Length: 95
Image (cartoon, rainbow, N blue to C red; front, side, top):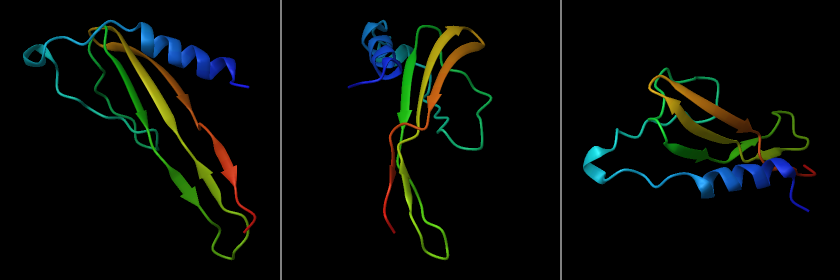
């Protein structure tokens, strides 16, 4: 069963207005979900989805963790955006 949060994110991405013509677009600035946060926002009406893989294993052995951090950025104004961030799917291996 899919979580309501995943369904809401998918609907937001599908209902977003189409991107402007190539010559009118602002440069793509990523803000991967990690410690550093960008001071640059996405343009008004722009929806940007960023995701990746993260794997961590303790030095002394033990169970490792695999995650799919995801960040959805929606431009709401010239200098503002709404962000939806999650760790995504989490998997723990047996070590």
